Image (tube, rainbow, N blue to C red; front, side, top):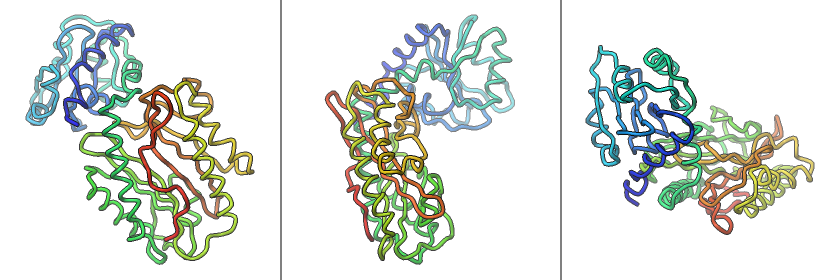
Length: 371
């Protein structure tokens, strides 16, 4: 899988056509996943302006700080046909953006997560241009993954699976959640991730909080432990996988009962994935058996989120999302049951909707794992 496959030059052409169709004169993209998607440049986000100027027609220009020009030139961006211009400290970079537009513009699309100071700087530089979200254009380009992107996500999934398979080396009674998390983070890097995006180690009552993180609380004998981990590979594509473990001893009887319900619900939701099913229907495939067993109120979040260059992106598997799934869409299936003050459980796989069904990118067992 080469960089040219992950970041092909024709993405810029497709984005320009989509920009014109959306009634925008240009996209203005600061560091983030949209910029990387179009150019392959993993730009540093800081107070110095970096901005891809992508007109609906004409030459794309990447405005960068002079001290970061070597990094921009070493990225795939030049091979995609992007011209690079730089600015030195102490000078105003916004006239370079205006110049790259090469004429008046009526409406521009700004990166969805652009810093406010840059939004206001562009508003001052282009006072007559309406500002809209670039996501209106790029969401449709990014939502269906190419074969190269699926391969990159599969590589990330296999790497994070390796970490879960080693959990018995670190997770045991008496160690704190934070101590276990430190070992996990090192392993995430060791298997090929360039960054550790998150490590959740939530034991006993902490497992009832879906975004707990870690603490200095020691793990107790027989406690369920939710371990949700993920990182970013050199490709830019991400991993995200959750398994629930039992830290020695015997699990609470009620926990074993609802874990069996959760496992079946997660499997049912994975099996339901195919082209044409809506995000809401996929959510219901996980939610219905949990509600039927009396735990509906304990399933606190949506069933899944898309994944790619961002950890959370379109599509979302949630009530109210009536958009049908399509081949190439990649997302999590991660139902959970959380009993406040007692314990919780979650099972999460990343899957890809294929032309005739579903492909799991995480393949470790989903049964409760006793360590």
